[in-house]
Length: 297
Ligand code: GUN
Image 1 (cartoon, rainbow, N blue to C red):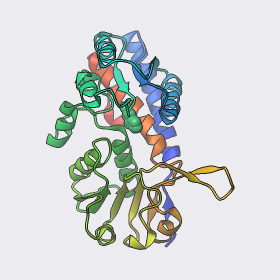
Image 2 (image 1 turned 90 degrees about the horizontal axis):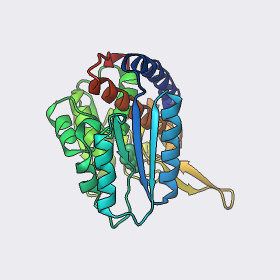
Image 3 (image 1 turned 180 degrees about the vertical axis):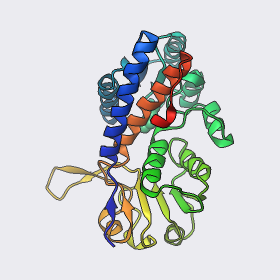
């Protein structure tokens, strides 16, 4: 079997188009643009690339982007004071503090300081709790993007066997909750899982989010499985001095076995920013008490 390539980039572009239309509608009704504040502490190169991408996409969708770049030695108190200011700022509908933070800062305390109704990352314990208990909070962007791609590809996911490899708070755990919400039978695998190939081999849906280049092998997969590769790993290319991006799945091997697979790059990555814009717009409509047909997103 040669797998269908799941075009996350194209899906995300179409989603951003719909968001742009609704952002214009919001501006007309509210008399202001929806606003996203992004906080970057320090100069981590990967984080700088992500933050630039978020800024561009936010402005491109017709929303306001408030960027706050702080020095690497910013104190916890100063960062918390900025979060408090953003919580109180009516022009700000969404707040995102780019992770990871420098080591001297307490990530959990910073996330806890973000007003849950502006937590468009869905990282606050209140939003994590709502996801776990079936409420309507904000859902972390990457897992939600994966669910959108899965629903688009497979339709109803009820009864399917799903394996999530990785148990991070940002991807693995919320991903498992979302798949459970779709009535999948969910297994969460991790570094201590015994016989990972056997666990993966039973799955109709495999979500790989471990951060280890090409760890999941094609021969592990059940024939026709749908594979969502969340990994973005930079590795040395065959040409000297060059690098390339690979996922957590051995794409070549997997595409001979899977029914469908997301590529890296161009699969899950573009969905993350699109869902961030979606969450920001949902927040803006909610905060202004305006009606939004969320199914249009
Ligand atoms: N760092 C890597 N991914 C993310 C994300 O989705 N949100 C935030 N805030 N930081 C990240």
